[in-house]
Length: 617
Image (cartoon, rainbow, N blue to C red; front, side):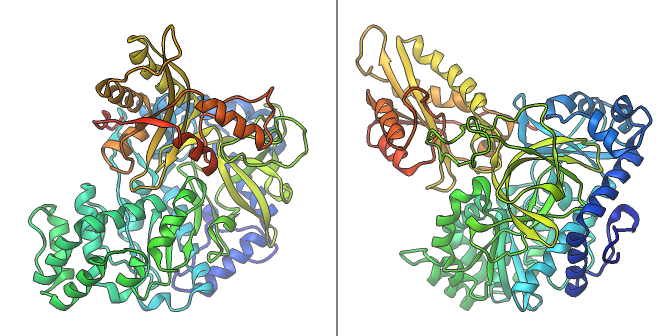
């Protein structure tokens, strides 16, 4: 690929040696310099391949023109394409939406009707992801020296998967990648040598996987140059796991013997090879650091050569930044990439920027990108302001785009403006609303850079769960039936995601009263615990999987508050600029001051006593 011309290689994926960082940077410069030409070529390629699919031919009528595509193919949500994907899951041909065979369905953390969304994927898409991952290396080596002189302790895990009636596997995008030959048979890259053997990453028992990966990371501590996981929440769970299990890990290190409860044969074999022999001095050192009264800076103490911690700390993961900084000992936090089940989108070209300054440059050969301008609820043209969970008069509570608004192309977005991302992919999604709200923060060459603002309609998230206001209302409505049968009324409620502990958990604030009077009722703990469980059982599959299988979300809590608490919350919101006439109770709050107002009036606390039911679907 040369400057000034769109990529000419098959699949639009340039070939290069990932060990050659200079070549990687050259490709990135070319891609970001030729954005308009590459985006045009991407759309032409997608239309040419797929115009005769059942989905597109109904709109294009045999035409291959870009303007016809944008005029006739509608911008859609998941519910619009769900019937097509379900038909493929049940045995229909991929040709319904994709000319390339769909080899699997990627389950999204966003949900539809309580179940994970399923996104189509092709064999070529795995190559596109590999190309994308390889581009992360030259960016990091530009800012951090010597990454080829040691190893990465990246804690990577597979999630549960299931087989659809058609025989296609349905699984999370990262599980798909780790189980693919692209990952398992990847060429040697001296910049990405892991302390975790593949067998420990691919172990389906999350506890055995976590234990073995941490053990391998501790044994190779002097070789570790960077640590991390995909999400900040997952890395913090690993630290908490270490806090609970360091004595046993020390014992294994001291004796050179893997604990008997590690029964996965692949794990036992590879970890035994890493352990090799008894290491009593190393065990003493680990014990000394872990036995300290404070774990502040524990990552730097255990892995002293660490140059950065690689985790996603944008979006809902931002709530974990302060906890990560406590454990890190001053090590920079790095968010390298922006991706989803639908598509891999962008790269952070300034990886050492502070978490709140992170922006991603969209890579134009990943998909065809469009953007829906996000308008304010009132005062069109005024700047969007995040409400922090306490909505002021000049802040919109949710996005209100007109359905007939025209999309903006990647090269036409404006600095400082807010947009919802729309993608057309090589895998069968056409003008699909991803649901992410982004703000344009700058440009790298001619490629716009975006800050992730939030997910559309999501109010609660701890890990990969995404609970909307509607989902929360349905769950609370089912739970309040229990107390209403006892003559107790739920007057008002709100919620927040409490990330102060590991794992974090959902907190609901309830104001209750007895029917017929204004007194706080006497509450039966068993009944209130049942309410907690009912809310959990009513939330979607991803929440229940995180809670039951992954243990990445703690038991849901209901905090009962005294009478007048929500009046005090309204007074606070009004003092912050909300209109008395337009005020309504926010169903999720993030403001620390607002949470303190509620917490100061709590009269009783109850937790779910059992994990909700979950099975792969």
